[in-house]
Structures are given as structure tokens and as C-alpha cells.
Image (cartoon, rainbow, N blue to C red; front, side, top):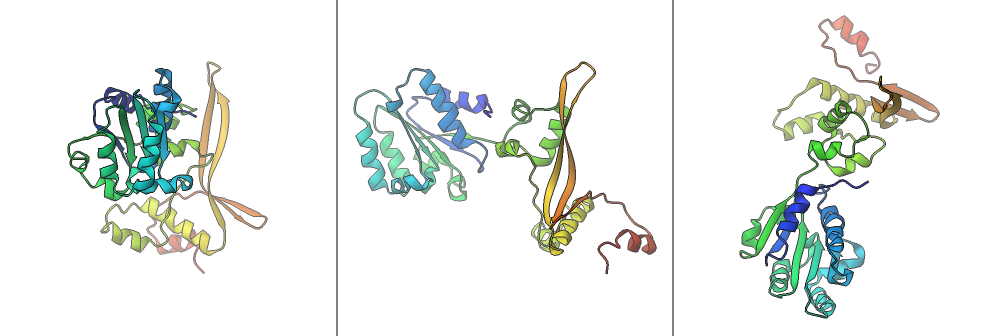
Length: 279
């Protein structure tokens, strides 16, 4: 599945050959590597750039770990520059490269080298990119998918897409799951203290408590989704995802549980409704 990120791709294209280090920043999993190694590389190839003139290195991969040493990386790169034509150097997770500032500044001093990098850790993002590269950096800050980007590949209705986008956000990886991902806190008190006792939504708190109770009782717990394929009045196919909060498995037993908060006023009703969790 290819999600077009034309807004960011066009930004990179507009900065091509400007003599600066093109730095793609953003939170992890927002699509920086895909933008650089897939979308931008495809653009270069379609423009007729020879593959030998596109040098790509994922600095964070195990097989490229040796290139985290600048005294290994720089000789390797110089070996690739065999003529005076323009070379495009694409480096992913450049913050893992030792002395990356000096390496990048050395590269852009070469007249036939155009440099593009990504960076995502806290140290890298906490610095002003322009200052970091002594006035030689040009930043493209990337965000998770906008709603329109999300819907460009979402397989169902706009309303269903809006509901999922609001619930799960716009990280591209979300669109690859059969089942959506949720995160629960092991202890709600720690969660609330970390947030200074703000954002106390009883519906979400109750769901979290039920999840913890199920784990305590030894269940394997998944978020449940049932995919329903139907047609509308015009005959168009509609794919709906119907969600249930928990699918709980223990041995051969399976239970489906939906959390629905209802404020309880009487102690008698409270004990009755919570009997499953009270000894």
C-alpha cells in the first residue's frame, strides 16, 4: 500500500540542488523513511537519474552499523563518486552517525553532491536544524497523516474513516493492521499522577480497569474487530469495521466484552452491576 505524501514530496523537490542539507524531521513512524527511500527516490529515477548516482544508507540497520563510524562512511561515499555528475546521498536516521554534523558539512562542500537526511530522536529534534549545520540546513518537518491522506487509502466510508482517524490517529502503520491497537496503563494512579490528574475520562478509565482485571484473571486479551461487507442503495460495496472492546481467550473459552459506562447512584445497583469484579 502506497500512501502519497505529495505535500512533503513537493517540498523536497523544491529544495533540490539548493546547496543545503535537506533534513526531514518528525516523530517516529510518521513516514520519513518512506518519503526519502521510496517516494523521493522514485521521483529521481523517473527524472532519469542513474541508480548509481543515488546512494542510500539506512544508518539504523544492522548491516549498515559500520557506517555509523564517520571514518568508515566517508571513504565509502567518496569511492562511489566516480564522475562529475550529480550524486544524491540519502541517509536515514542520521543522528546515529558519530560526528554527523561534520560529515554532512563536508558532503555539501562537494559541488556534485546533494544531501538528504532524516532524524527523529529527542536529541536531534531538540536542536535548531539551521544552527546545527551552521546555516547549511534546510528543514522539512513531517507530521502523521492528515485526514485527507488517511482517506486516500482508507477502504470504507468517510464516516467510518473519520471515526477511526479520531480514535487511532494518523501514523501510517495504523492502516496496515487487521485489528486496531490500543494501549492501556498497568496502574491508573500512575497514569493520572503523570498527567497531573488531568484528562480524567470515566469511560476510558473504566475500560482500562476492565482490561487490567482480565489480565489479572489470566485471559489473553485482544481488541476485537468484525469486518462486514455490504452494499448501499446504489449497489456500491461498503466495508464496515464493527469494533468490540475485548476478545478474551483462556484455553478453549472465548468471551466478548463491551465496556459501556453508566453512572450508578445506588449502592445496591452498584454491587449488582459490578458483581463480576467483586468477590
